[in-house]
Length: 175
Image (tube, rainbow, N blue to C red; front, side, top):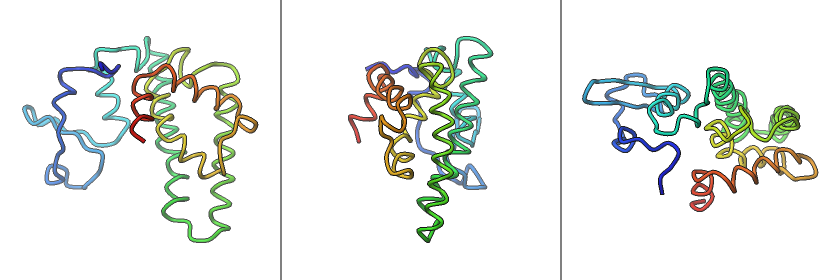
């Protein structure tokens, strides 16, 4: 299967050791032939999207690209922070309940955003949708489930991405 992120350069990816990255940050990317190094998820994602054969995955124009980056940043910072605290830091039921309430507020925001469009960043599937898709079940676990009754737009969005994006299909097939 040829994925939307296909590129001959991307197919040469291999794991790197942290000796190349003194801060020990993950994810990390290294192109050995020119010693090009990147850390931080959004920077690495932007780089791969920029060199991929499918340019629509990052956005067809500058405004779409900025919306994709906005949603990637939102999911990677705001939502991932709550999820990380919930699963790895919170010790008490009260702490978990507060984090669950915070996640519900965030997901209601996303629910509202999806009331006016089919996808997060643009009117077509982008990497922002796929990235959010990969964490959807974790977000649901924090709030006690993402049902169609509580989140009809998120549920419709999830089903649409699942049915129409090859990476999303592959993710579900390997879960």
